[in-house]
Image (cartoon, rainbow over all chains, first blue to last red; front, top):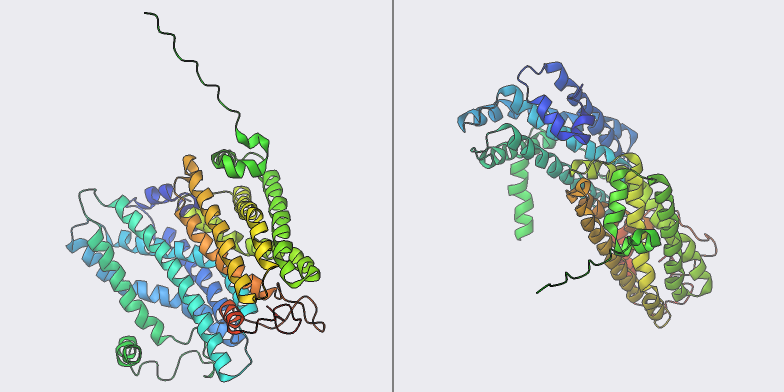
Amino acid sequence: MYISPVTLLLNRDRFWDEAGRESLPWRDMSLLVLFIIASCGLYGMVLAGWRSWELSFYVAIKLPAVFLITTGMVSVFNWMLATVLGSGLSYRKTLLLVIASMTLAGWILLSLIPVTLFFVLSGVSQTGTHDELRYAHNSILVTHILILAMAGVAGNLALYSGLRRWVSDRYSVLPLFAGWLVAFAFVGCQTAWILRPFVGSPFYDVVFMRPDCLSRNFYEFVFGEVLPYLLD
Amino acid sequence: MNATPPPVPKLEKPAYVEGRIAALLRAPSQIGQDLADGKDVFRSGVSFLVTALVLHAIFGFAVGLFGGLSVGLMAAVKTPLIAACSLILCFPSLYVFSSVGGAPLKLGQTFMLGTSCLAMVGVLLIGLAPVAWLFAVSTESLPFVVMLIFVLWMVSVGFAVRYINKLKEVPLFRRTSGIGAWFVIFALVSLQMTTCLRPLLGKPDPARGWWTSEKKFFLAHYGSTFDDDKPAAKSPVSNKGK
């Protein structure tokens, strides 16, 4: 079987060739989805491990959920955009491209688990003064943001190369790629916001989802609180 | 007029045969070719690893003399430990990053590549060890020595990145952006590992010995080093835990 996470990692040309067949069965894609659930779940478990086992378990469910829910929500838009821009990509191919890019991001997350675990075990203390706890939380938060961003960039570069391979040379893939990226980021931020907490602030109780998760959205928070604070 | 053609220059034997260190410095593409061929990768990898650890130990001893002979000996043990542990933690990411970046390697090749990078850092550090020693024994300012070591180490890592770029002559390593990105992870892990295995330059706390169980993020640790404006670095109390 060539449509597997291992082929995608080690022999990407072959993967794109095989995945480009129109007769590709849906079950081939399910292997990639299972890999995303496993890799993101494991990383999620480590991500919240500094706070408590309970949150660790919750995030192992929530992190893959963020990726998969976001993909599901933007998939129809992705296909419509690809059709409107004349790329000729089918719905199945647009979905496979996004899932393949997330699979590569999953590989990156999986490979960085030892590093993350090391940072959590050696760099983050669960005891200390208010300021020390806040510093620990912020440090681990920034570390995870950097790692997730790195995984995202690597995955999206793969998405771009896949697009280039499947779409005619005469067609500029950049507008389509940018459109997909913006849609994914826009919806992904809100999905993650609803499903928070992930890292787990030491000043709040551990919960699966915050009671106020639907009371406002991510962008209201950014434009209403973060930006005024930074610009003040 | 019969012009005699100029003699064909005799090709030099590849520098690789002169030893691993010479190959790292003069013929990295030879190492790249061996990596691509998968020739003796484990044996070469072990050889690079041993070389790297010895070189790091010597550098550690040289800079550790800042705190006296006992600290020098401690640093000679801890410096190769920092390098080896960082590489072990970063091994999975090297394998994945190189593949994602377009240079898929087998496990043995990844091992040899990682250890050769570490050896390259070690070679540069050993070249800079006299400079580090000279400054280390002629100052009492801990922040200065920490900054000096950081700069020297970054220079060495920079040369390791350059070594990776030299491998591009080999088709397998035509796309090395993934390996380049991996160096960022390796650098961050090394900094945290240094924090985890502190003290490195200060005299150890007699109660706790060479190691500490206190958890600390590397930014906080280095920040506290620079916050400490007391110059008496050679005092067993003032630079404790650095």
